[in-house]
View 1 (cartoon, one colour):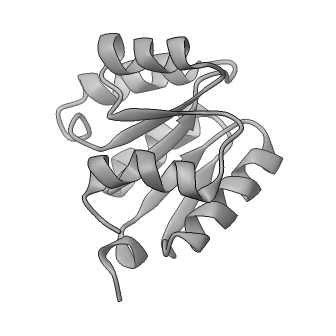
View 2 (tube, rainbow, N blue to C red):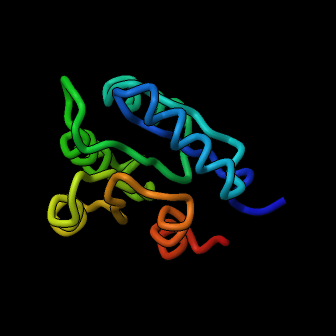
View 3 (cartoon, rainbow, N blue to C red):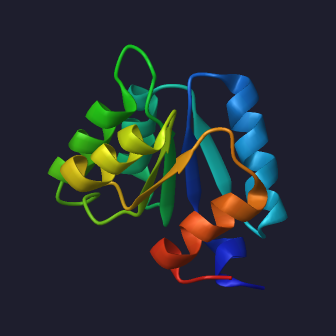
Length: 127
């Protein structure tokens, strides 16, 4: 059993199709403890109830954007150190989320299991 397999992961996206894609990619990478939320408010409730080893969130959600969600996570003392990977529509947006908002990393959509692994490896130190 690897560290990835037991690590609790939270996927946050307002498109069920993207949640399903991410869940499948994470399973390919060995993650088995995966929760999901279809909006940032629900995700915050889940994060207050359970400690996650990784959050992967879309940047473009409504009514609360992924960037605002990230700000709230980073502002909360209990959650601020949670590794947080932002899904961005382009590299500039992802870099901004990382540099200005404190994302641990970002991945530009569309992406593969391999490109996701490459972004998660330095953040989590697994694989």
